[in-house]
Image (cartoon, rainbow, N blue to C red):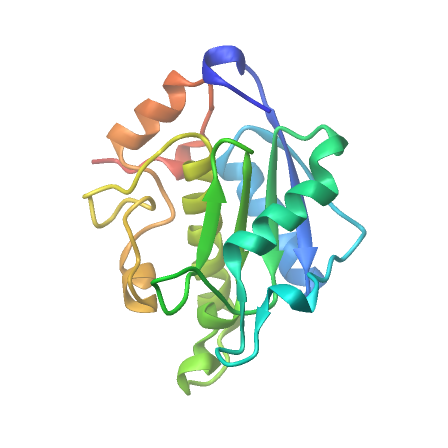
Length: 198
């Protein structure tokens, strides 16, 4: 795993599908994240399904922390600098009702949970472009956490905290100057589209 300023070139990233995830979405995600980060990205050909022991039947959600640890144990020996799990199920961590994503900066792994990013979850018509925009933002947000970034007060910055999908829609798919500077400080190179102009 990456630590400090040891990284000076592209980092390696594995995108790990878990549960039902559309292949076309993953393909688009690789293209966009490759523009946002100087990185080498692979998509796992194996789809992982967490054990039901991590599923809360009353909440109808998986426990995000347990799922993240389980995925890490499955892929830790593959040698990637970072792992991003894209999960087709809803998840939570106490005391929150749900999470869009979760990251462990010490293990270099993050997960994004898809259901609440879909417009149809809230009773709206499906909108693939809106759904994908939200996915990109949350993936960038969680990857930012794996590199040591905390939540940002700049509401336009992708590292701002999202309490609802409205917050996700409000922020942009880019890091503010402060957050991008911190990433640069640990050796992460960003594409121009990943940095806010002000």
